[in-house]
Amino acid sequence: MKNILTLIIAFFILSSCSDDFVEVTPPFAVNDETFFQGEEDYVNALIASYDILQSTYVNVMTSEIASDNVNAGGESPTDVIGWQQIDQMAHTPINQQLRDVWNYNFAGVQRAGFIIQNQDRADFEGKTQIIAEARLLRAYFNFQLVKFFGGIPIKPQGQFQLGEELTIPRSSVEDVYAYIEDDLLFAVENMDMASQDPYRFNRLAAHALLGKVYLYEEKFTEAAEQLSQVIDSGAFHLYGTQGEEDYEDLFEFIAENGPESVLEIQYTGVQGAGFDCLQCSEGNVMVGFSGVRGYNGPVFESGFGFVLPTEEMYNAFTPNDLRRDVSILDIEAWAAETGASFNVGNQDSETGHTGYYNRKYIPRINDNQPDVNLTQPNNYRAIRYADVLLMAAEALNRGGLDDELALDYVNQVRNRAGLSDVQANGSQLLDIIYNERKLELVGEGHRFFDLVRTGRASQSIEGFSTDKHEVFPIPLEEIQFSQGRWEQNQGY
Image 1 (tube, rainbow, N blue to C red):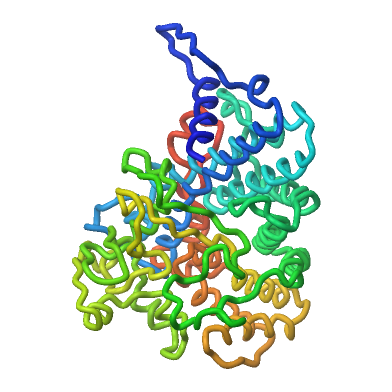
Image 2 (image 1 turned 30 degrees about the vertical axis):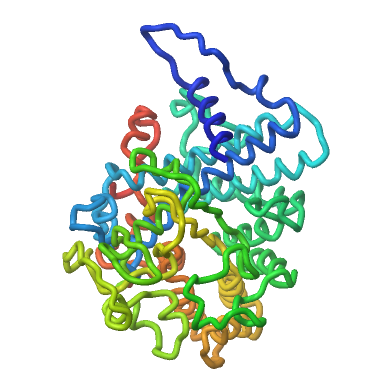
């Protein structure tokens, strides 16, 4: 992917930058007219659009740190100060991690838009599939942006051009969601059921993402309909329920690209990376950042000690819940069992060491290339089947559609974790669904937005201010670029 990524970046640079003092004629130039000549060019541009997904590790880490699940961690209370501030709900428009969320996701919007605005430059069999994938990707990136920042500028025709920050306003949240829906409806109508390549999404991924979007909008009937397409397809099942390795032994979390993978972001450990360009890494940067500081022992690599589950999170599991020790590593117990050693970094009582680590995404010993902390190959399951079942259960319950079916979906998830069936309906069932989401999806970046969209954030997150912290501030630079035409989010 790297060569194609470089090519697309070259296009962005050449088409958006100028030098006031020196005229330079580049030896080559990539633009709309010269690039899209045939199928191979569209496929290469699509690869570049998928490639930027790897940078969205920052979405997961930032939203998980914002939740009540974890402490920021790190070496000290000032290590990656942006995350420390988010952990304490003290973030401002000057925050590098929020700027990364904005930049990386808008880069994805731009790359997908490059394909969409040039969709008519060549004809070949299979082009509609490529356009549908590009629109799904654009929807995915815009969904991340609207969750984090609320209303954002949108441009259905394709890429934003330099200067349009002065003419294109921030759209309303409602309009952004309508825009996302339109892209995903096109995707579910035009994408194949099977992925063209392992890294590419398919129609069921589009159904799942659209169902999630509808759930966020509280369009429960529509959400249930989309999610049922995934469930009723028979293409997925909960890992460990059909003869796979026992769940209690599944220390690799969920099998990559396995029977539970609905929408999965691919990573590899074969290319090096560096701190001067974290977004250039083909590995999952979140994994190294989440590793145990100074670790020396079996199974795991050391890391930087961020995203530390709290003791309260660990104790939220019952002792017989198989998910607890698969999801969270009790480092003291592990060290006593294996003889491993480790260092303690940040010891601040509010943001520091807890004794627990996000076992789903901490580095395992493997043969990835240096720097090993930045090139971990662990894929990120952005939507997995258990999430689909729980989202469908919520939509069925909150929409007053079918509590019996909702209960069945919840019990499927519980049974896989070694827990017995529950019997409930109405609001009691909804509380169980919310708790199952907290337990099942810990460490995966969903909790903060689950709390916000259901109006429970102020009750659960210390320092959360209603009518402010539901969204994050637009980066100050973006407000400045618009010369004040974009209004900052309330409270910032």
